[in-house]
Image (cartoon, rainbow, N blue to C red; front, side, top):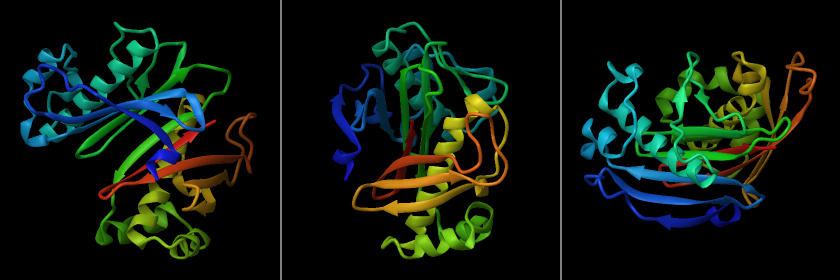
Length: 248
């Protein structure tokens, strides 16, 4: 399944790693070979704050009160971002976040970041007019949490689509939530405002092709993205997480 979405290569672990990062991969997106990614898996039990200095990454003030889980996710994601940006000709650029918590990319780069409890992934490519890149990785949502948020994420028609897609419903719901997050992340640099996920409607899902289709419901977002605009996503189902991509 993974091979139909991304081409992967194994990268060496950093020298000063203290067993924190356990696997690092990099590569390109199959259908969009100009889009590169770096992906790291990590062991939270081996995280310590000195890793920021050892990996030559700034420790942001916004993490001062954060728990280790949040610090570890941030560190793994920013390490991946630095490797990817170096690959794209920006070796000295440290990816920081703005007041809205969105990553601040170099002007000529379009990218997206996501992380979960055990992994982080970064996608980026040279910027072009209206390029969209969004990525999200989510741990499989448990039944209790799913029951609490289902109506905030999907409507009745989408629920029926998910129930008939031949996935356990927890996986199908996580896929729906994740791909809507990916689309929101892709759109945010251009719309610069919050967006209810229920406005992003899933209209088709193919396990055979790892493909999912969404459209905008309700009012026009921008002149370039009127109501009804269609977006095409891809996904990978891992044992504990689901990865989704929106690239246009």
